[in-house]
Amino acid sequence: DGGITQSPKYLFRKEGQNVTLSCEQNLNHDAMYWYRQDPGQGLRLIYYSQIVNDFQKGDIAEGYSVSREKKESFPLTVTSAQKNPTAFYLCASNPLEGGYTFGSGTRLTVV
Amino acid sequence: RKEVEQDPGPFNVPEGATVAFNCTYSNSASQSFFWYRQDCRKEPKLLMSVYSSGNEDGRFTAQLNRASQYISLLIRDSKLSDSATYLCVVNENNNDMRFGAGTRLTVKP
Image (cartoon, rainbow over all chains, first blue to last red; front, top):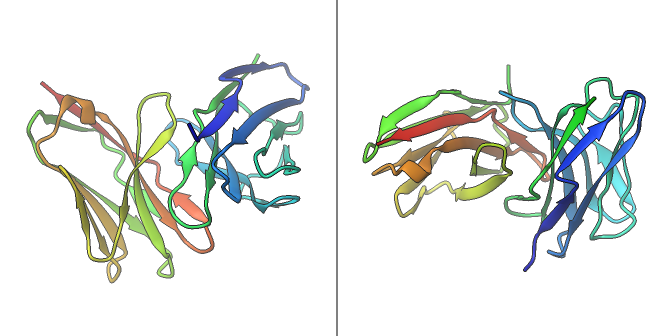
């Protein structure tokens, strides 16, 4: 079945540590996105990529980095520079028109 | 001013009721519109796209009013399983999607 796979489902980060969240899709979609969701707030865009080897900052890119070496994969690294990383992270893709398909999300907690 | 605004609710309605949500958007150049459903601690899932002519899918009806810059979602004959948060999503330009914070619906027996 086609879809988006995010892993891990839950992730715990220590202070000062970098962690990488995985996002893989087999939908052959060109565009991929990373969003962050905090309680009571709408999704906020971190980074997006519309083509391999190219990506753009979203509204809250500080403290995050991404890569897009393959069409299927768009990993997100949460660096130590991100001071408040505890949130629900959602990866999405779409075929440049139409609505998004989301992965099941990664819940990141700082310990 | 937020780009996409929704009444957060919660809306608490009995089974069988009709309930409507509105969503306003600030960018008049917005191109496409969607309603998503999000269950607690899960990812959002596309409920329906919203077309200028309005569209219906079973008990759900979505409408777009470009002049007033709002979209609406009507749910008829509410079921317990409709309990969720409903997100309004606006595609402003070139897939720059903006999300509302969501409206929470609880359908009670």
